[in-house]
Length: 282
Image (tube, rainbow, N blue to C red; front, top):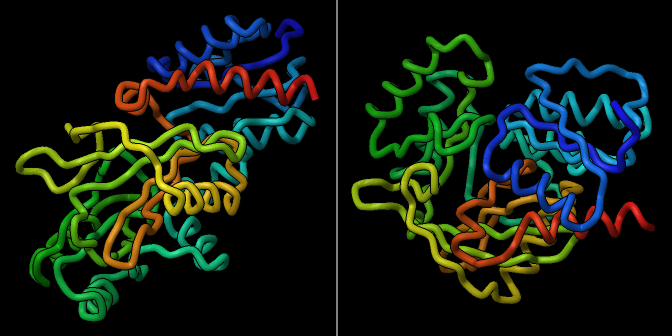
């Protein structure tokens, strides 16, 4: 690789990655692209000053970040952030260690354990795997029969992670959540996501309706704290709200932001590029 300032590592050229690359050029940074699906990466110096980690695949993102860090290249985000935000059990454990509120949750590895978790939480509840995005394998549990059917179905999957269950209290008003983007400890903005008719998940990938909202102080403080706990330089923090206030639902270490830009009118790629330029000039 020719000597450049910034490397954008990716596996799928989504709109986000294309916009980031253009923004890096707009702020005067020499940038290069590394597609890990076609280019091997090793433990030699890549000749870059910083790598932006953008693979969709968690394990590709994690491995790419760790390899670059091993040869002294700073990464956004760091491998530790990608690891702990990419696994929801690890995320919740880190949040609990620092006193951050999230929905009551239990981890179950078998049908029997899942049924006992549901007894503790009651219905409705949410069943989700530790690793995954876009609401895949996330189910609303209304009764024990539904839970048993789902658990037995997932027992057929080859991955032990996919056969692990996070049984979580369903938060009233859970058809709406809030996504807050945090960059370098600064809140870029927030959007509200509401599930479409006939759907209970608010993910944009599942047709969730979005609108920009002005983040209030509690929302900003909680999102910034969650990002700090996970060491996130550039993360999306998803919040739920009940009578007790906001709580963290998930943290995304390789955040998508197309819907966020549409809702908030914040030029996320430009803000990211400017932040990277500032980091490099320190």
